[in-house]
Image 1 (cartoon, one colour):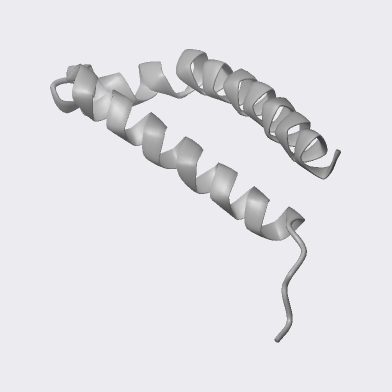
Image 2 (image 1 turned 180 degrees about the vertical axis):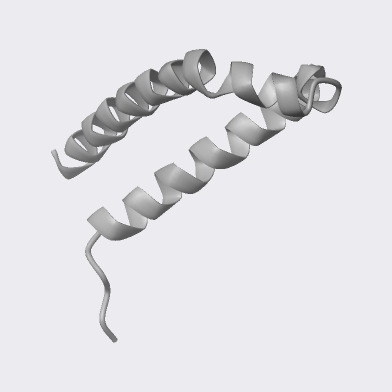
Length: 71
């Protein structure tokens, strides 16, 4: 049951992060394109940045939520 709760938590967090990514894409991305037009149009750069940010957020949340195992 604990794993199911963790899975549900990650699914909910992923949903929220997806909404934030969509809002960022529509609000921040146009401004960044004006500043850095060439590099931000490279699909691999965008995919790498989004993947890095999402992975970091998920690991930080997981580390915060999971119980610590004191020795």
